[in-house]
Amino acid sequence: MPKQVLVLNASYEPLSLVSVRRAVVLLLREKAELLEATQQMLRSNRQTMAVPLVIRLVHYVRLPHRKVPATRAAVMLRDAFICQYCGETPGRQLLTVDHVMPRCRGGRHDWDNLVTACTRCNQKKGSLTPEEAGMVPLRKPFEPTYVALVLLSNPVAAARWEHLMGLTKEQAKPDYAHG
Image (cartoon, rainbow, N blue to C red; front, side, top):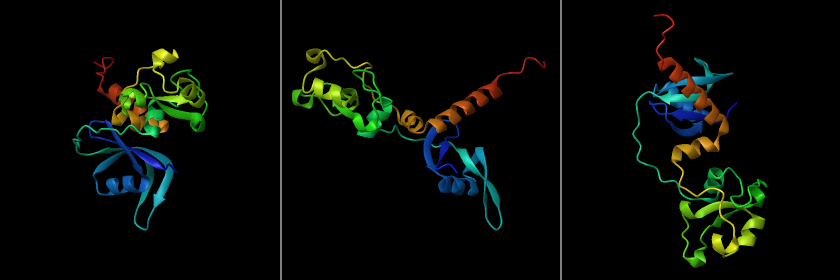
């Protein structure tokens, strides 16, 4: 049984990942509709329901722009667990977060100054600037959107969303073959 269910806004924009229990409550209260489910069933005395994978809210929920905190886990997720200096993927335990412009040199602890680095590269760079160390990040650091991090945190949910978006685009295309 899946541990998380992808919740889409009425506009099909990904909002969050919730527990199966929370998704079932939204479905039973008719606050959401079922878009995709597993073959597994949930049973009670009065009702049987497929285990949800993706649900869509019935009414559009307007959310303010969500600022995502620049945590170690979020930076690594944004950088796909790849060292931004050498391009290697040594695994989470051997990765660190590096301040591109070192804090001792006035660098800030924010999205535009943080990258994932392997232990070796982080130690090699030390408190040097990228130019001094001759180590420029492979990709310029940036602040990801909340939705992007939701999808990055669960590749299965991201694949389901992409599949659903393909289906909704196909449904929106006019059918010229039968005209």
